[in-house]
Each structure stands twice: as C-alpha cells, then as structure tokens.
Image 1 (cartoon, one colour):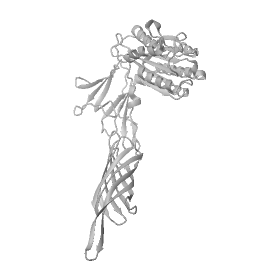
Image 2 (tube, rainbow, N blue to C red):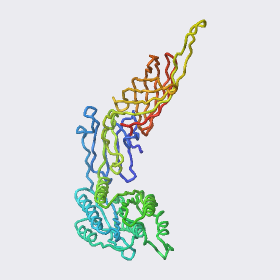
Image 3 (cartoon, one colour):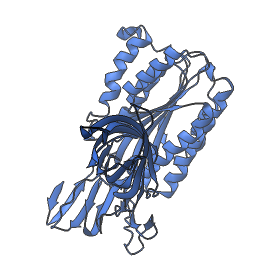
Image 4 (cartoon, helix red, strand yellow):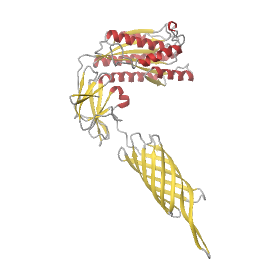
Length: 476
C-alpha cells in the first residue's frame, strides 16, 4: 500500500494502479471475502494498466443474492497504448493419442480463435507461438508473432498441419518455449506495453525423448532436473528490461492408454514441480472445455476488475482482480440450509434405590447407572452466523438393560468463518421412573462434519455424558 495526497493506492505487481479515496475512520484491509475492503468516494485507474472496466456488486439481504449495483457508476477507461502479452502453446503430438489427436488440435484452434476474437474487441495484443512435439527431431515450431489478421490463418494452418509421431519430448519443448518467450519479449515488445508471458502445455504421457548430449543430459530424468529450476525461476526472475514481469505456466494432462499407474504418478509429480498450475483431466473430451476456460481466464485477467460489497459488510466495498476470479470472484450467497447431525452419547445417571426392612426402617441410596444413547441435533440458520434448533436422544442403561432414558431441549448454533461452530443448549433428561435431570449441553463442530458434545445436569440425582456426532446435512 502507498499513500499519496490523502489517497490510499494499491499497486498490483502486474503494474495496475488502483486508487481509493477512502474513509479515514476505517483503513483499507484485506478480508476473507475480498483482496481489499474499503469505504470510498471514487475509484480511479491509470493506463497502461490493463483495466478497462469496473463492475460493482452489492448483496441484497431481502433477495438473498448478489445484484449489480446500478447506483454506483461503472468506471470506464480508455487505453491509448495496447498492452501486449506473450504466449506459447505447447502441444503433444505423440502417436499414443491415436484418433484423439484431432480433438487436441480442435481444442488448440478454439483457444487461438477465442483469443483472436477478444483481441479485436479489447485493448490487449496477444503474441503467440506454437510447438507441436513428439521426438526432438520431429518437433515442429512456429515462431512468436502477433495474433492479428495477418497471422491468424497461418497459425491455424500450422496447428491443423501437425502430425503424430512416436515419442514425447515435453521437457525439451517447455525449455524451448521459455527461451522463445524470453527472446521475443526482449526484441519485439517495448517495456512500457509489455504485460506478461505465459506457457500453456498439453501432454498425455511421460517424457521419453528429451536429451541433450552437449550438456550431459543423456536421459529425460536428467533433462527434467536441469529444467525444473529454470521453469520455477521464471516466475521470480527479472527479465531483461522488464522488472517484475514473469512467465506463468500451466499444463493440462490426460492419462494415455499406454501409461502405467507408476508413470501417471510420476507425470503428476513432475508437472506440479515444473509448472505453476496443473489441470488433470479424465479424458480428451474435457480438453476442449479446459482450453476454453484458459482462454477466458487469460482474457479476463487483462481487462476486468470486479468491485462488490461483501455480504454483511454494511456499505463496505471489496474488490478482487480478475486474475484470481476463480478463487475470489464476487460470491453468490450460500443457501440457508438445515444443519443436522447424528451422534452417540455415553454417560451415567443416578437414581434413588431402596427397600424396607422390618425393624430397621427404609434404607435408600443413589444408584449410578451407565448408559448409551443415540442422539440427533438439528439447527436452522436464522442468520449467517446463528441458528436455532433442538437436541433429542434416546438411550438404554448398560447395567440391567431395562431403563430407557430420554433427552430433549433447544439448541443454539454459532457458526464461524471456517465452518466450525459452537453448540449450546439446555436439556431435560428423564426415564420411565420419572427421574428428572436438567442441565447444560455444550458442543463444538469442527471444520469437518464431525462434532463433539457434553452434558452435565442435576435433579433426582446427577447425570453426565460425552458424545461424538457426524453432520449428515450442512456439515461442509
């Protein structure tokens, strides 16, 4: 955060500057529901920064939903200079794909087409290169060029012309893509309009072909060990004349027909170690939707800043960059759902026992009897944090197996941000002999569906119990 002339500025590491004229009585702070919550009079942006629209939302308590706030004027800016992003599409061309290879090329073409159409409508220029890999010898490379009318058809034709071959040189191709991005960024994109670089890769198998004898990388494993620090370092390094600019990488994997379980685990592990994001799809059919998601996310990350009023924040406005919208988008309200749990209690209760003996009178004492009981707990949310309901249980004594014990009472549920909850209640416990016990029921629901409870009561003796339960409704 930086202060300038009474304003509070948030500087995004991607170079976008958003300023808030904020309420000095309450500083801008990060929260669970937003990157920043702040009361403000106006929001401003400065270009070049990649932001072209601000959307404002508020939570309507009566409708119980997020609605577009028409009373807040939408912030519009115009970029004089178009920002440029560098991309590499790295595609597996190995013969293990068989008839699915056509679907891979179709998904890649849809990805390119979506970016092309968006670049014509928005203020960002995409530069893109393509690598189709099998073995190193047969890996095909198309250099990075602007995704414009002059190059669009050639890029599509290059993808359509890719052919299947035996072998999978994934590590070689990723390193090639990284070097191409670095070189093209230095030579062809002025620092003032450069935004970022990204690598999107797809494979259905473990690398079996990446070697480089000149560097002593005589096996794919050695090539991988050499590539890993270079790929991870690309997310932190300062590229030449581009301070704070990084290369992001994502890989989509599908298990090939000829892969063993061990190879699949190794592919998953290595993908996670060399790429920032890994998407593991069940089959090739899901690849089209994944590439569509990646293109949409890339487009949104360039243009949109979402602003909204978090639920229950009483006029506070929260915002989050669209880069993170999959994680921190304006949240739709959770439906008010009944919470219900089933549990088992173990404890004891006391009752009077006695007999009359002639000449000695009436002799009486307390008898302690252990019991087990089945319990149900239920609460309906009155607000986001508070619910009302009841507790009921039925048990059987474990000494004579003839006494039934019944418990009933109201229950209050206080829910916290992490879905844990405090359970409080007052219970009445009785048996067939009309022994009566009144007490307090206290419990704790964990983040998981499990919870624990304890009861302490008195009356016609004393009764205590401890129990464990599992949420069968509304526990997550």
